[in-house]
Length: 257
Ligand SMILES: *[C@@H]1O[C@H](CO)[C@@H](O)[C@H](O)[C@H]1NC(C)=O
Ligand SMILES: *[C@@H]1O[C@H](CO)[C@@H](O)[C@H](O)[C@H]1NC(C)=O
Ligand SMILES: *[C@@H]1O[C@H](CO)[C@@H](O)[C@H](O)[C@H]1NC(C)=O
Ligand SMILES: *[C@@H]1O[C@H](CO)[C@@H](O)[C@H](O)[C@H]1NC(C)=O
Ligand SMILES: *[C@@H]1O[C@H](CO)[C@@H](O)[C@H](O)[C@H]1NC(C)=O
Ligand SMILES: *[C@@H]1O[C@H](CO)[C@@H](O)[C@H](O)[C@H]1NC(C)=O
Ligand SMILES: *[C@@H]1O[C@H](CO)[C@@H](O)[C@H](O)[C@H]1NC(C)=O
Image 1 (tube, rainbow, N blue to C red):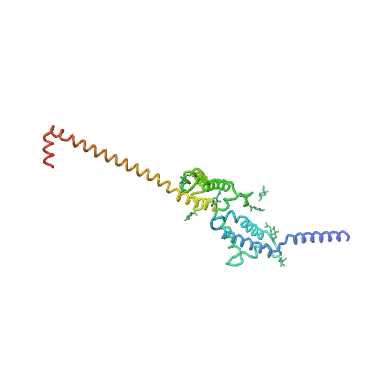
Image 2: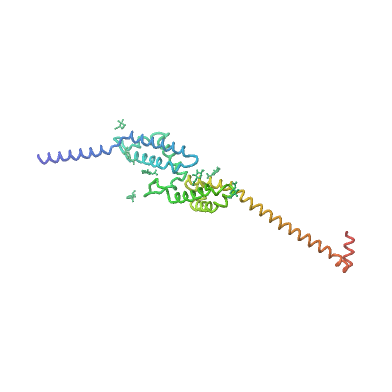
């Protein structure tokens, strides 16, 4: 009888322990849902704020990580009714939560933002990738050359072309030209602006070269024409001598003229 009681109480004990442990891991799904809602809201606000000039990836990475964590928290946490996420997805055709979450991912991935950051064991971190830091270094070198006091609009192309070429070369190396957005969008946008600035300011520079090219072309063409004219004039002077030698040709020429 005593043994049965001991077994019975042990069983009760184990049961209460497991119940207690389970109640510890029970999440408040309302709180988690609010966390995700706030994360998506801050991410959207951040994206619009940094849409022009594009600093979206750099400025919104923490907000994006919050969205990912919020969603994964809802997917892994349970309350009495089951996983928190199950109360919000696959219940209707509208799929509000899933749509907004997918849109966040889609925006992030279309901008190739992940290329701006390091991954740690498959998870996104907010630490800049090597490509990003190298590109920013080269861009800062070009900027400080353009900003420096000895450089003005007329000399910028000569003085800063080394820095520009280095930046441009590095960019071509890290970006996939087959894609419409071949690198992290922040970087694509900076490079696009830099190239526009460069071709706008250095067109005058190229113009000088073109003028030189045109002048030398004209001179060469002119001397070629001059050569033929001179050849013709000289040969015409000699023609009478030849005509005297061949009467037939001479009479033929006279008849023809
Ligand atoms: C979840 O948290 C909210 C706010 O903190 C609270 O009002 C609500 O009663 C909680 N729900 C449960 C099931 O604990
Ligand atoms: C999940 O939510 C809980 C409760 O709000 C929070 O303490 C925890 O830090 C969250 N975990 C992640 C990975 O966001
Ligand atoms: C990487 O992730 C796997 C599973 O996700 C884990 O087992 C491993 O310990 C992690 N490694 C590091 C270095 O964090
Ligand atoms: C990166 O994320 C950590 C938390 O994961 C945060 O403490 C840190 O301030 C963030 N760094 C930047 C530059 O945002
Ligand atoms: C160059 O000047 C521009 C505008 O005057 C400024 O925004 C930029 O930060 C400067 N760059 C450097 C590297 O000093
Ligand atoms: C630019 O600088 C060069 C020499 O540094 C000077 O000869 C030229 O006049 C300057 N041009 C302008 C537009 O300031
Ligand atoms: C580069 O800038 C031009 C003009 O602002 C724009 O039309 C073009 O779409 C931009 N390219 C990319 C890849 O953003």
